[in-house]
Length: 124
Image 1 (cartoon, rainbow, N blue to C red):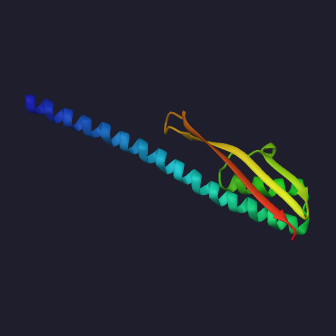
Image 2 (image 1 turned 90 degrees about the vertical axis):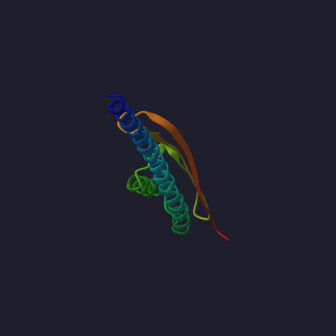
Image 3 (image 1 turned 120 degrees about the horizontal axis):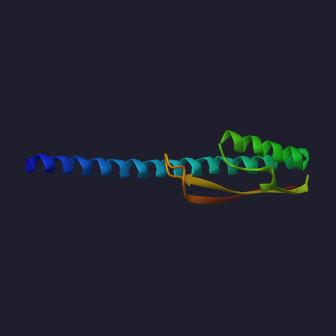
């Protein structure tokens, strides 16, 4: 009877460790995914600033291009978080937003990562 109880405890401990491992794996995966998407988004913001500066695109069009890309990458960016300064020869685009890393199943925020991206274009 004692060995039965001991085997049950070992299985319970193993199950708890598996759940903790899965929890940390999910958080790590979510963090890495968000960071990779943010890097791709930053490259895109710089690309849009360069193209929009050379083609003299209006601020609302720049904002729409950035919002579409943010949606593709599942980043929570709103139009009011995109600041476009200048036009043509001197253009500065900046985007500030935060992404929440949540606990699986409970949907509680564990960590909120802040991002700031800038894209600049200057006619030389």
